[in-house]
Amino acid sequence: MKNLIHIIKFELRIYFASPIIYILATVFFGICGYMFWDLLANFSEYSLQAVNLERMVQNENISANSLIFIPLFSYMGFFLLLVIPLMTMRLLAEEKKIGTIELLLTYPSRNSEIVFAKFLASLVVLMIMIGATSLYPVVARVYGVVRFAPLIAGYLGLLLQGVAIMSIGIFASSLTENQIVSAIVTYGIVVILSSITWTADFIPENISRVFGYISLSSHFSVLISGVIDTREIMYYVLFTIFFLWSALKSLESEKWRKRL
Amino acid sequence: MIEVTNLCKTYGNQEVLKNISFDIERGEIVGLLGPNGAGKTTLMKIISCFIPYTSGTVTVHGFNISRDPFEIRKRIGYLPEKLQLYRDVTVARFLEFAARIKDVPKSSCKNHIEEIMYACGIRHVADKHIRKLSKGYCQRVGIAQALLGDPPILLLDEPTVGLDPRQIVDVREIVKKQSGRKTVLISTHILHEASMLCDTVIIIAGGRIIKKSAHDNVLDSISEKPLLRIRIQGPKVEVLEGLSAAGYKVEVERPLSDREMIYEYNAEVKDEPELQGRLAYYISDRWNLIEMFRPAVTLEDVFMDVTGEKDGAVS
Image (tube, rainbow over all chains, first blue to last red; front, side, top):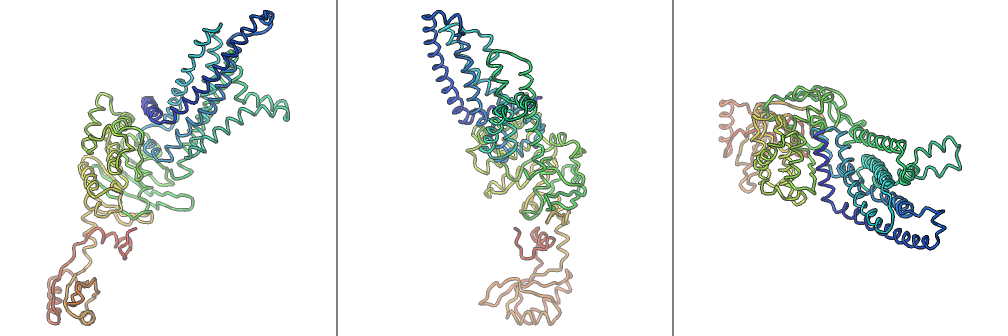
């Protein structure tokens, strides 16, 4: 456990010593900020129209949550999909490529501690990135009513979606020593797991239901709509554990497969 | 301290280590000597618990390497052959990480790192980023991280490769200081280095141990060869024919002066004064005997002798 903390601290130092994380964070905040501003402007315009046409208030839900944050979370989930593989691609691949893995694996730390510490260090970075967007609801509050409780579910969804993508990223990084390959494999797995439900029309219903449960996108949409469902949380937890375990096994098998 | 018994390692069909067996006592500095590709690095990687082995037994500090690798890792300091460090952090930060992961208590961590940095001559670069260090300083940082936590066993894989002469001397000094305090296994293909640093030398070639002996014994074993070096002024062909006719096994080692017809010859003559005196008389009677001596045996000679590389090319 002590080693876990030492590796997390060291990994965070490496994260913040590299310009990549600053570039990724800037791009992420830039795009999210633009999307938020755009949605806020639309919401403001729509609210004015709604006030003029009172009947719409009766029939339509025009809260800031539904018009700003549900679509914003949806966009942010997509941006995380773009950003996280670039964050995680170096975690193990770079260590193998440059050879520092030899030092790390001969120190008195367990392989599981190494994989988990890298995961947790990435989680800290992810939480900082997502946490910084919590300014948006405060700004939106100036323009209209914002219900904060559903936003918690939305942020939880973003975090869990990010964590799931990170676990895939670490697994992909354990497979190769090429960072680009690692990122591409992560994108590939995430795209397959997100779009697997598209096959619903062509396959038997039973299999389609299984695919629906495996799919990343279907669980994410439940959480960002403001519903905290333990089934969705369990899905993400199990999903993450599976890919971290796979990364660990991949790292251990590396010794047998080839000369490290 | 380190016991290796019938150790074998194969990569696919390639057998890299073949029935390696040796023991290293506490406090010994042992040189693992061999040409490139002999299997030294593979052996080091196995003992450091980095790669698995195919068969055999390896025990380090009483712990079996396949059952208790974690316990062994706590007790070794390892310098890999191709040392790579985390380039984006400072020397002090990296050593702090290595010390803490090696369970150096937080209270004594700073002082311990200071001591090691001072011993390795890297105190003045503590706040520099590792990417800005020269190869020599990186190697010193590598040795420093191996010394952190005061492990009883040091595994140093080619610690002086790629360094300039000054840095080589410094690194050797650091290793010498560990004599008697730690058990050190040092792999090298530089024979002079092994002869300077090690109490015992294990010569390995083609994945097998060719010879293991205390350094002095290794030299003694070859010095029993009855080799005598003679410098004679006289026609080369006539000298060779004359000495051969007298029953001496002689060959030309090298010309010293073609113009003055001075050549150096190797003759196999037993180390007995009477035999040597008779030869000296025989030569002086016919040609001009300039010098006759028994050459000092070096580890190079031993290496060539035991590995069968007569051309002197150690790859």
